[in-house]
Length: 216
Image: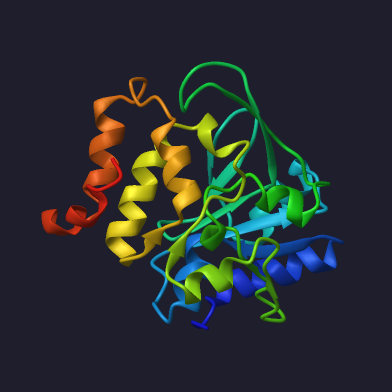
């Protein structure tokens, strides 16, 4: 695994002393398991209410940039985001039609279940290096397979179709047949052009997309 930055370790220790638990989530864990250096870090804090989290951040970091309304994401510089586990409820059409709220009392498995692909639903404790993998994401990493976490909630967000193509091309992974079927069922007409371009530009070479044309 890649070396975890000192500021992440310090914050995780402060969270532990306050009675909570801080876990690395998403792309930083995925990349480290693939022996790639993470470009940024995402830390999810369990067991502490938002007000106490903000106090800890102020003590450990100083002024932070707050993003979000119903739920809170704290941006600590260009490479570290801190958030609470959050619940999502579909309320309207498209990738923006969700009601989202932070819930520090969620279980780890319940929080991970909202993620898009199993390879992004692996967590790591930065203090112990323990890997928490409720949906067998490591096995899918070994097989270079992109698989949806939840067939029920995956189709609710149309942006995930583009993310499937982007991940498959960038990581050179195959997409699980059942996930391909889910992607084909999703209406993409609600996606604004800037979001489409945002996913496309993540690939440095246009040729990277050739492998995705067979299931579009």
